[in-house]
Length: 215
Image 1 (cartoon, rainbow, N blue to C red):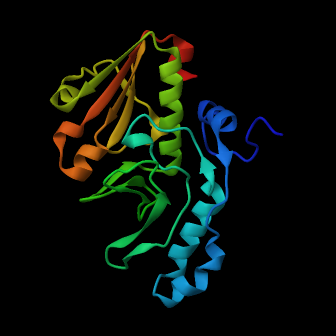
Image 2 (cartoon, one colour; image 1 turned 120 degrees about the horizontal axis):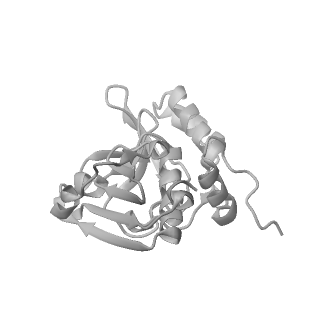
């Protein structure tokens, strides 16, 4: 029995790649070609079906440990039927919720990873960004000497002078910031999706050495 996942999608940092290798699993998932004809007959453009097929080939069946927010994120990365219109663009499911949350995890018209509830909110510009953020959360929690959780209006009071954005997470509504000895994760997606500012949350990881900051 293999101890490490062999087929890790390319394009991840070493830290995220190691995280997926050690903690990830592959399980069965929807095979897009089984549904291509029926999707075409229902009016879904072929190029959108191709986009779902590309996602399935790259990420389909990937099971990761729970994310620290959004009640763990998708249970398994697995697409489903595209929904939308030529005027609005097309979305498809990134994976079924791990727990009962009032939104779905979706892939947006430009490949963003986000949540769709009362409104569509892209969290990361890419799926890789979501995976990087989960990997970084586990890494930071392992090496930080102290972790502080901040909520609601206090999130906006976090001082980010001397910090720079962590580029690999491709942050949109959700962002990571790297300081001299700290990492800050700010999650605004749920608050924006549900029009509930109280749902803003951040984690401040401090006491990190160079390895803790970068991995």
